[in-house]
Image (cartoon, rainbow, N blue to C red):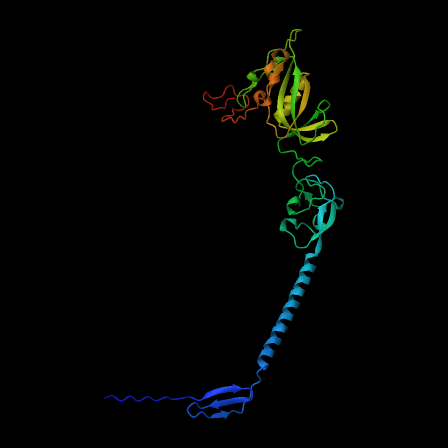
Length: 322
């Protein structure tokens, strides 16, 4: 037979009471009072005090941050703007500038200049309007190398300004375009079929002009959508190539009567050298909408440009057709 021996070891249990510490021996049931005491309420009171201090400090920090943010949001600095229109190419003077205050914290494109000394004496790199905020892209240390008109338009290289009377044109501004034509009775002066040759070909001289009473007069649109550089009173300075300018002078020598009409800046160039006399007028041209009657100048990109004076071009040039 097996004998089972069980042994229980009972450890003393510690009881904490308000008066101190007591030990109870579970095997004997006797208790022993300890000498140490613990203040039951000291730990909770210390935790509450720490929480109040942290809360107060947080409120102070938040209040200080709000005050600082408000002060910074109200911070401003002077910024340079144009006091009046400044044309392209003009040397900037103190009278051209004004100062306004803007928030210190603002987007980078609105930084601009804060000291007029950074701008005075420089040159306008583009036309500026009154109240424009000046920045580094709008000024230049050196004057422009092309002629500039008071409205800021510049004469491009190899182009010429040609004065043209606006006496019979009516209200117009320099952002508009001009269609330029003339009235004559010599059909040779506006013969598109004869003049529509490859670039650089020189036409033979026309036959002598013979004017008779039966010679019909006609109107010819010579050029369309001509750019205006500047308007001075009743005279517009047209932005033309030397060849266009010379053509106008040659027609002046023939004594033709020039005319012009205002044309929208977004309009398509009409057919050059389009001639019409009164006997050619037909009713459909007067009654159909503009989309059916407008004739736009085709953009020609010649692949061969013979030198001036060449007798004839090669046999197989590749040119665009109307």
